[in-house]
Length: 47
Image (tube, rainbow, N blue to C red; front, side):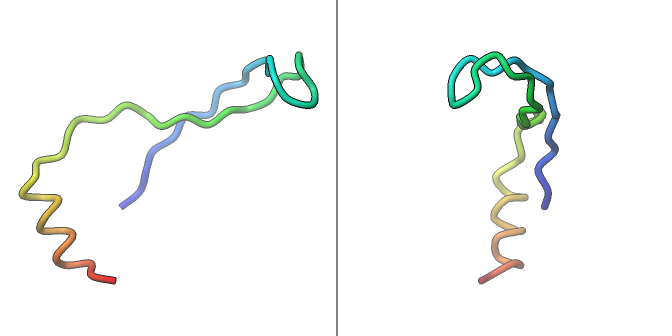
């Protein structure tokens, strides 16, 4: 299972170099998963 992400270029306002433009990753919005599917996948992929 993978998480889809979106990279956005933003101006940093805090940290060592405020005002520097960097790419920031954020998760892509998704639709909720049905509980049955979650339990099925969890039972298949045991650690």
